Length: 402
Length: 157
Ligand SMILES: Cc1cc2nc3c(=O)[nH]c(=O)nc-3n(C[C@H](O)[C@H](O)[C@H](O)COP(=O)(O)O)c2cc1C
Ligand code: SF4
Ligand code: FES
Image 1 (cartoon, chains in turn yellow, green):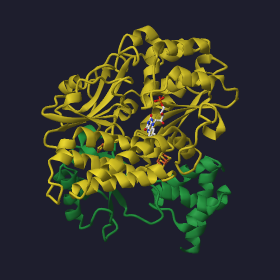
Image 2 (image 1 turned 90 degrees about the horizontal axis):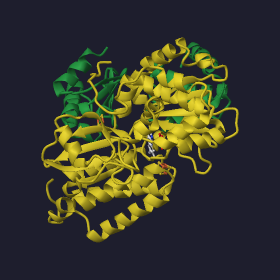
Image 3 (image 1 turned 90 degrees about the vertical axis):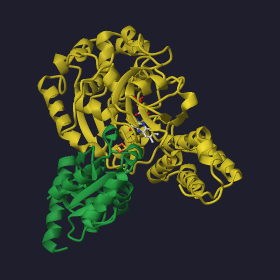
Image 4 (image 1 turned 135 degrees about the horizontal axis):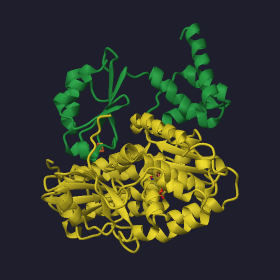
């Protein structure tokens, strides 16, 4: 692969790390100690939903079953997100060791990496790394001589479906089915892969854990804010001079992000990928964090030259394509929202109908079965609200050239 | 399909079932192998996989139709997938698509007459900081210009 390597700066994930050091430290420790450390760190899931890692692992650890699984969610399909690719390419050790620590803590003997099909080129290097870990007894039987700890990692390839990043759809896919989200409860921590307790975690979440183990929960929690501890990898793209992956503490403002990335004449920032929200200039003081502008890490920057209606159309086309079609609010709702966007494009809309569509969007947020349909109205609502002067108020209301 | 072709396909599927195990969760890995080799999964292959895994053929078809990387009709020898998601779109995807369409004489979604290329849109390939991006089979290319994209395709076998 000719993907360029840059020197990466950051205080947690990109800080220095000695291969295997976290594994050496945990082997022999009571699992309660590891769970307590994670609890103190207040680490929350980096895949989007922000569920506390210690709680997820505690629930999986508490389930009484001889077979359990830990899954590394490497399905990274959210448009505008690429940080997991960087982690898997350049920081493979961290992701693998996060899984090993997870296996030890919850009592799983098997870890599975669900790798999106678009990243098939990462299969070989990942497998090579896994072999290397086996040869060094960091994976396999009796890890580092501990006879009670066997753990293996396998890779499962996705086949081009965004919704398979949703954890229950991912499990369906692993079991050989269509990637259709399950009803909850039961939650994967109780009945996941093969109906066994399963912890599904994002690549970045897992990659953070070895640092917390070696450097301590307090060290970790000094970064970020009270409710959002630590740092976040941001995938920055769009209109800026220096796009790429940045590691920044939670609590950083949009304005600061724009400065770092060398963005000029910025009109809009989409936070959280296609399913996130779009902010306008008056909102650039907002802070990244679970308590304010939450994000799985995608930041897309738009300058004054961009047509926000076209941006919205691109997002809605994506959701229409990727909805699994299982539930009505999402299957029909996304089509209706896209139709609405096209009506605006053709200058063929009424404000009354747009109000109806906004109501529909609200219904989708509460009535859809999984996160896809619950969050796909986000760009629709936020773009029409935050850019209404551009999109709705500066047009004559009849056909016009765009 | 010739009888010999059928029986060799049956044997091949037997090998994959042995490799991955006779269980439902082997279905996607087996489909992946066949898709990679034949660039589609024929009716006969679907029935044979179903028989060997002990599931209904409709189940196999249902799975294939769900995943965009699996298909029941043959495609060209090289699958070209151009990212249509937002940042690649902002950075000139349209020009890349036009150039490829002109050069190969095929519209997006189609296959060239000599069966060498199928050209499609893809959703975000995870290379948004280096768009426009495209994938040719399992390789990815980025920072494309129309000229560069065409050159890459000209070098494909
Ligand atoms: C449509 C959809 C797609 C998702 N895609 C991903 C993904 O690609 N990677 C990921 O880690 N989480 C994804 N998630 C979130 C997962 O369902 C799950 O919350 C996450 O993997 C849990 O890991 P974490 O707690 O470490 O964040 C997605 C959710 C939805 C609704
Ligand atoms: S919300 Fe959409 S993607 Fe999720 S289950 Fe319903 S139809 Fe499928
Ligand atoms: S938008 Fe094209 S690779 Fe992400």
